[in-house]
Length: 236
Image (cartoon, rainbow, N blue to C red):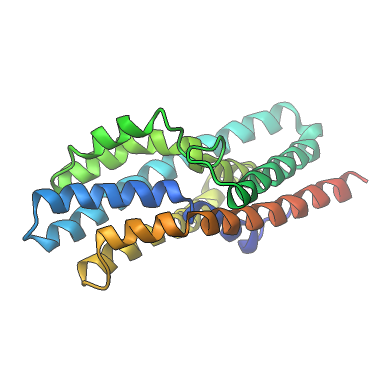
């Protein structure tokens, strides 16, 4: 299956607009700002440190996902088109689930958001981040809690990239994760320069959470249909 910038960017954008990551970032910035109300640079450095930690861990997760799919395709080389077809179906399902959240939103929805049972633990962990170093360390750990709601597009991307060699996957993972963390960096800088506030950002996320799900859902649905169609066409 041909790999294109459009497919990787599409999944990365769908992942980047996920409300989970934005919610966790605003909680981190609120925790830092609460403990350092007069030191706005702490917000900038903390937000960047948190984002860098997310980038590092997700890059590492990407390598694991790709190796997982590479192992499967090596064992079942004759079934590679069926594997891609399955990825397309999964993408379609995730797209429908996100569109469902636009039509009838429910916090903690399965497959699209962080489970409600995990949120108190994440909030308690984040509240300990009062410094740049703390934000970085928390960022490393909090990715485990983000996986349930952000891993979908990444798994699909990893499945497609598995056909490449190790070195060939690196630029794609770099590109994907830059897109994924770009909103976090943009929000951090916007708050630092005074364009907006942490509270306003959090409120904007809550007001537009259904639209974010709709955007991610449409992208996932279209890419899923394309991948499934390509797999079927290759099998014919």
